[in-house]
Length: 511
Image (tube, rainbow, N blue to C red; front, side, top):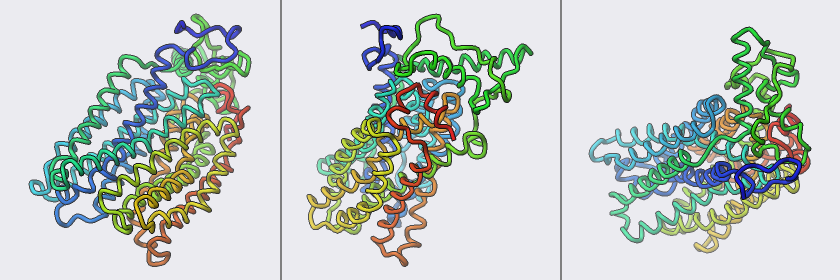
């Protein structure tokens, strides 16, 4: 089949095979790239725990490992905002390549880190600094690469692609868990702690470098972004020459977004407006709109207090709930399996790996299901299940008498809670128009993790009041409640609502 997009008159519905090679490459890279990103994110959760004495010395505690995890989480809000704005200005693909290179470098430097015996406390300090920088670059990757994949996706495939992309997080968790279990078995705990863990960071860096080459050779920005970028550049040019007024329509969209949306609206509604246009087809001039002067892609101020604030804060509540669920059912569950359960150190990664596989499979289905029943409906139901069933499943998992029972309850727990991430890539991309999509995605996805990520500090303070297990169970319930509240505050995004160009959906639902 030709790579060129068929005409709108003869192709009422486009599928993956109708995309040009760079579009198909962007979707593949979005899926595989997010798996690699999450390998970098979750490596310390499982991979560094058996080597903590070598890195942090005899004074190492569980809080040391938690701080290494939190360091990357704290870097991600910075990366989401900074790289999101760069992506909206310079392009998704260029930004992704820079972020991938930075992620690979940080992983290689950690792999070469001297031990505590050589540097003392400096070893942990350097690891913390590199994890913080790595968090910035990882956030830069998903803030650019995932909106890029959504901009290439056909409307009715966005939910499925969202589920496939975000399901790579639990697949990465499973990959790391089984790799650690295998290395511990092959090398033994002593050799693994001495040097075996470094192999995993080298592998992560190698995977990132391979993805960098792939983006360089095969991936390009979507037509939706290029049209918006061209309209903005033309508008800035006419404003600089004094030939135009550079205005924004009254609904708050910038000229670039209005131009791209108007271009999409000229076609029949069921057609995938994200697909490439025929050569020579131009977006309407943005100069015909009336309103405020156009500006550059919105920064963090526009998100927090400006015209995008309602959408941002609604997303913030929703994502805060999801991050609470993640920290409780992935990070804290892994730690408590090691300290509070009957599982031995080699059994913990096996239990978490099996749970991650179940989570991944259901997460992909959840993304597609959201297209069939509506995004808000799915999130409301999933949040309710997480709030009611999640705490009980968490307790049963931690107190399970055998590995098989622990793995089964951990799998049910993660399916009932964090599999709700399935539609999130599509949801966030549909809440913000092209000229602010990466900034909105990066900030909404990353700033919301700050408060949940501070759990190493507030969980010990709550335990005297709620109990050791009761504290985490309360966090699970709160996470489910916030998912419900955030979803209820947002638009319906029904099957009919989302069956349109991304900018059209964002324009309809902006509030």
